[in-house]
Image (cartoon, rainbow, N blue to C red; front, side):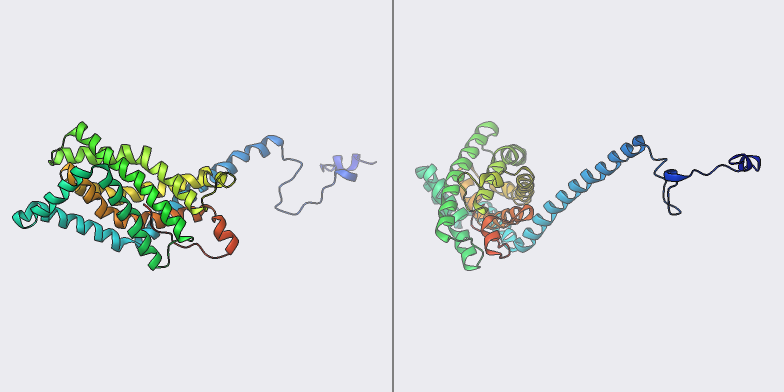
Length: 302
């Protein structure tokens, strides 16, 4: 009499014992879930994660560059205005201003690399460091950071001077539009992304983390944070130096370093602020972690 009655009435026999599963309405049955279906859900969770990481990284780059440029737009605009004024004085000043430019060109010709090294240290390291220290934005210890800025810009002044000489050989020393465009393209899309900016991204992070000798270098060279610093530095470099080098290459080769240094003064402050922001976006440098203080803008180097 057991199961015959339900079958005769057209009813399905209910399982008894451990096979009965107490499930709430609307909840998927675990009995029907298969391993294949569970595995199929994994790629759907992984793809949005990668996409969100890319979006977050792009947002960090945009926030870092936009915030730093907003704070330093006055010195950047000042440099561009000064550059245009120099062009106007050189080409339109005539006999009133040409002797001063000729004297500067003669000094550069006589001193050679020394002029490039000393003037670039002054406009890229010493003067921006003094400005940032007066504003309370220069990282401590002051002496160590000042020495870092001077040595960094001594090296970069030498490299930039040789870069201008190389471009004079490759493209000529004319100040016509095609020559200026070739030099700007070589400067901004060969020299900067492949040589100058990678170097600056590493040395600035090294400075922001307190000049570690060995143990802390793994934090300095962390790939994601280093890539953020590289992208931020490169975008800022393009924003400042595509118009800046258009001014520089409008001068004869002997006057290009002086024009470069005028624009460099404000760019040095801008890029230093952005380097500090990029370093603190991924992780806080050790000095900030120990003190518990918020990140401060650091100035005085390109």
